[in-house]
Image (cartoon, rainbow, N blue to C red; front, top):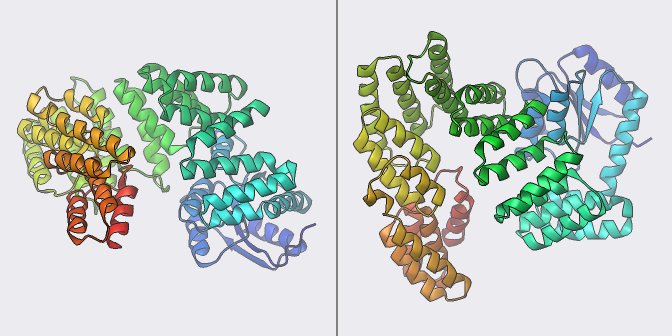
Amino acid sequence: MQDYSDKRFLVVDDFNDFLSSVKAMLREMGARDVDTANRGEEAIAMCRQKRYDIILHDYNLGAGKNGQQVLEELIAARLISHQCIFVMVTAESSQAMVLSALEHEPDAYLTKPFNRASLAQRLDKLMERKALLKPVLQALDKQDPGAVLSACDSLAQQDKRLLPLCQRYKAGALRSLGRGEELERLLNAVLAERAIPWAYQALGAQLLARGEHLHARQLYEKALQTFPMQPGLYDGLAAVLDAQGEHQRAQQVLEDAVRLSPLAIRRQAQLGKLAMRNEDFASASKAFRSAVEQGKNSRFKSPENYLGLSQALISGAGEEALDKRAQAEINQALAELDSQFAEDKSLRLRSRLMQASSLRQCGDVARATQLAAEVAAGVEQLGEFFSADAALAVAGQLKQLGQAGAGEALLKSCVEIYGDDPEVLQGVAKLTSDPAILGGAKEAVELNRQGVRAYQLGRHADALELFRRALALQPKNISIALNTAQSLLRQGESDEALREECRQCLDAVSMIPPGDARYERYQQLRLRAFGE
């Protein structure tokens, strides 16, 4: 048996008798430091104050956060080390719950009831594995992917039994370092030895990102023949089908994933979005409703799910007036949205606009028109960027509610900010035929493309001039502004005039939404240039 005398334990369960029983078992195993908690929120607070070596956490705690949500929070906030053992404990054995828990990869899954012997056996094995992998886990804690690679190579040579685990950690490190070719070679080598779900999923994601849709599709379909109970593989196949334009089929595949593992918020949200695009409003309502309910105690709670549910219910009514049940559900969703995201000005505007759409659907055109006009004025004064998806949604609603001028203005701004994204331009084209708006990005996008090419070829002075010309045409375009800033820093970080020009570039897009994929790059450039 392992020595547990110096290990710090946390046991979380809403039944005190169970806590007492497990605490007694751990004492018999030699544990001296055992804390307990009854609620997930309490467990998170305790982890902020103390680093635990082993956590035994019940899945279902009644009200508040469940075990899965606690694990998500602990990982995201880096409140537990990779060396910590997290065991999910539950009396439930339903497929939905088990798959949901396993998707978030606790170190082990333990079914009640259990005795001291079975607990000790499970923890002993986990302790042994963590000890063997300690160099890798330490590197992960330091967020040093290079050190992870070195540790994996060393351990795999020392102990061939660790090779499969090391390969997975190595794949993650290569992904973090952006070494895509090496990653693909590794994944192909792994799959040549044996079929493993995570390797299929990782390779499929690489192929999809590179635009090899057919290859990715074939890979996912092959994987699902062997692993039909892996929800992540269905997610990957759905993404590929969506990219291929097979939106109906993509929805069907994602529905299969949801049937297997319905407790994944982000999967439900993605299904809602797909169903909306397919005008399957009943399915969209169901998916968004699940995402809203599951998200109430989760870090993955998203305002988009509340808005998505409201829009699906409105769209589902068609030409008919909203029934009282749907109206009440919309009002509740928007009230919760306003309460939980009260500090976000843009969300308040979107909530009011959705309320206007609901009023219009109920036949109260006068109130809907008045509210839409107020929102239009608020959008003009907002002073911050909507995400591309949000901008398109708001523009469409404004036009539908009689605020055509405000809608067109927002579309123009959307093209200025996101005009280098073909999908955004496609979305704009569905809402306007104005050539002045649709053609506004073409020249700037082409100049930016030429600038990127010049930069890659090492022609940095030429690249900077091309980026400057593109930025003059679209001063709020995020990609162009960031490219210009990077080029300016490349030309001379010590040149005060260039640094000031760089600041102006970054200030012009300082309202970039934090959820934008380029936000991290914006922050890094700002830090590099000004230490901010």
